[in-house]
Length: 245
Image 1 (cartoon, one colour):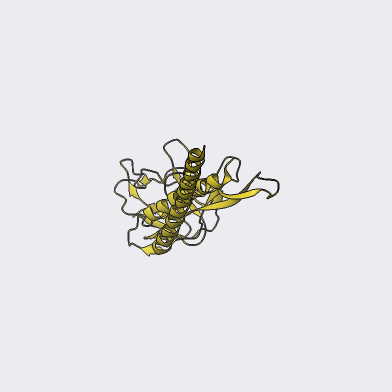
Image 2 (spheres, rainbow, N blue to C red; image 1 turned 90 degrees about the horizontal axis):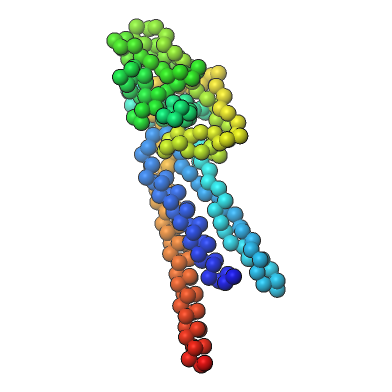
């Protein structure tokens, strides 16, 4: 194997993945409840000349979610919900599954269910959609997630779940997550901190991500330049060998 040629290609492939991840983070800098993704690299050891030992090439090993919370922004809208501290809301997905996330900007649908802009119904602590009866006014949501209608009647208690190992969960859309197969299931929190009239912003820092994007792009360009220079040297050497023959 021509390791001199392979090394810049391997580096460029990994940097391309990092570029894609960082670009997606930037694109969701204004998406409520979004958590940035990160890549973890590891050295891949490959056999080489026994006299020189193995060659280490960095390769992306896995991606994980940056679990730091975004800032809370008051909106004054009683159908906007956020969480103080830990926890995730639960939402019904079209395939029958459940997605978990921090962004709950809700509106009533035709059936009175409180849903997100994507049509995902927020679930109560029993796993059922939260429904507002027509003509009962805007809901009041307590810190513990208890939902009362405009008449003061209790409707439901919004489910808030602990998320063990959230960093390793798989994404479902931009702001929702699901535990991976075989992983621990989320558990209902007994004392959540639900905040009505606020939303959690994305935890992406646009300036930091832009700097990271520029650094990755420069490293990618350098790796491709090394590859091109190697090809040019190889062609020159082969041409000279052919002339001598």
